[in-house]
Image (cartoon, rainbow, N blue to C red; front, top):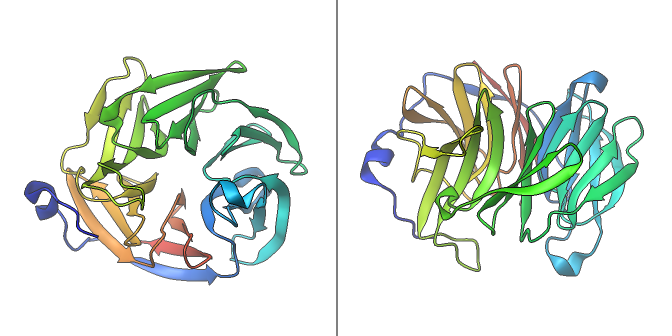
Length: 280
């Protein structure tokens, strides 16, 4: 894959003062795309896309994994179509599915309803401020919002540069962009990175030194840093003080990661694994 990387942004890449140590690795998953830590129930929930694309049908499901990397329930919630990003609000889990935003009971994994995302081309990641829920539309260069039971296309702008990962950071929505000039094989003319969207004004601001560095999938906060990944390369990156540094490289297909404490959980779609990294 040939990708143009800006010289200034590339110059910020280097060895990180932080170190990432692999704590455990769980295999046998089916195209895992996203992971979330369910604090109330002390468990991880993983989305399995299984067969990616419209020909696969509703063969996707959610798995339950223990914090120490043991598969507890392989198929906890089934009947999903390419399930991807997730967010928890109260006692409900919200999952981005090709058919919309699926609302699920955390108590038993049963599906409550599916919120339609009218016009969405590729629902991808989900995040929440504890009340409202935001969903990225990767191919539609848009972000949807569920508030008070009503869904709206909250923001549509090509500046989002193929939005994938989402993370609420105070009054900002951090967007992990994959890049510009997307090809049918998911390669890009130029890499993306991290941008901030003001939740009040919807103004889009690239984070200094964090663009043209990665085909970004997941993004989360770890202390004073933002942690994100480059999907095809499998590289886990850290951003702080206007600099991007490399924590480690895993395997191609690093997807929608999650941070809990000092642990970064990374699903690897291409190898069917979930990896736990302890970052010091």
